Image (cartoon, rainbow, N blue to C red; front, side, top):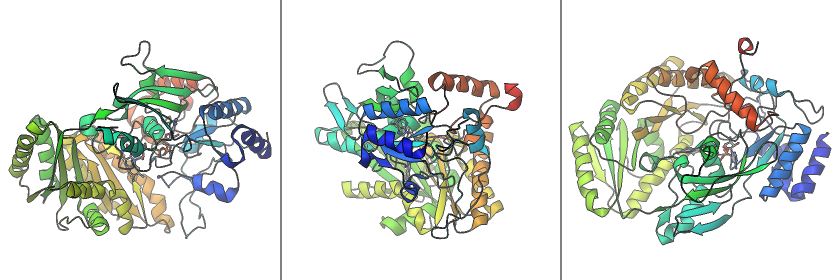
Length: 508
Ligand SMILES: Cc1cc2nc3c(=O)[nH]c(=O)nc-3n(C[C@H](O)[C@H](O)[C@H](O)COP(=O)(O)OP(=O)(O)OC[C@H]3O[C@@H](n4cnc5c(N)ncnc54)[C@H](O)[C@@H]3O)c2cc1C
């Protein structure tokens, strides 16, 4: 099938205004928040309903065209980037599914994009169809008596909370990107957020999904009630990064807003003391709703952006938040303060007003964006360690930064041991661009060496695919590939993500 033929068919399914195919327009879709691997698709279709998705997937299955689900493109591991198409092209119509992952795994070649002098790499691959879910953004049902909502996948995370907060409810998963990311993306990534320490990640808040399988068949998994019988395929789909099908509807839990909340900012002179305070707070049986840390570099950037009043000379700041019934909150906070004092806290500030608390959270949630004040570009890493190892891993990250002569800023969900080292670089400098993925890899290896893992919440995507063998042996990976093949026999659903290619020896 030619590209022209493909565009014609897609227009007949979704309408002319839904299909984007001119090269200059496609540049918008060449990456997500992970900018180090870029590739443009042949076509993007902004679907309006599940029938569009089904018809497009059937077309792709018939023509063996790879397709890539895309929510709102805020992902940080290249999850929706069309890097996996390998040698497939709409012109030749050739696509070898087996080659797909291997192509994505090869080191990307650095080539100038020619825009603003950027030297960000263009990955091999590209092509295929991006199925963009952003127009499927309706909240279909809100049932407060049963505390559930039914939503289309393109609903923005925060929009759901905004729709129910007047009645005293909220949707718990709150990635820092919640103003911009979609619930479909949250499901695909099993996203977390600052308040997931107490409330759990997306998987804890999804009861059911409607899924268009890579063959075009539609299945309903889970439902409105708890504990659906049969295999728990809902949990399988959550966190599968769009590689098992496209979520076209989700049934999610709503929670009652807490009666009260207390927030404090604890300022420490050393990461070791702050890290110990985090461990001690949890060991004491206190369950904060959030325990978030930002290091000196991040605090500097955030302060310049939001003017909260952070001390610029502090080595690290820790946000401690408790919520729940009013009755226990002051006592819980008193104990948390005491623990911080036992760990040589330099200063403690309580948020005295709602506005102060909101500004503190705006600053924390805006931390990634504020980094633009420090550097033209940055790459966000995402690793996890047992929380007691936080000081140790931060020392290792500092050593990696020194070895490579780069700055690495750190912001982390300390309570979960989930860290986000931000590698600062200049995308106009080819040499810096070339080195960033390797620096990220060293950070992930340090996490694994300390008993941690290679992602806490941003997923594997195309970015971390080569590090999967650090965590999984070949039989584990092979079991996952088998599962993928059952859902996606043609290998066309978001190829080049999550699973590294089979080793030649294992295939022989
Ligand atoms: C500033 C910033 C802060 C962030 N903070 C956090 C944070 O605190 N916690 C966190 O977990 N993440 C965070 N993220 C990462 C990102 O926002 C989340 O991963 C989010 O869930 C992605 O949603 P999206 O709609 O942008 O998905 P996209 O980036 O469009 O896609 C992400 C993945 O989901 C798949 N996908 C999307 N929609 C569907 C669907 N309907 N069906 C099947 N697959 C689908 C895609 O193929 C891709 O693999 C942050 C990102 C940014 C830029």
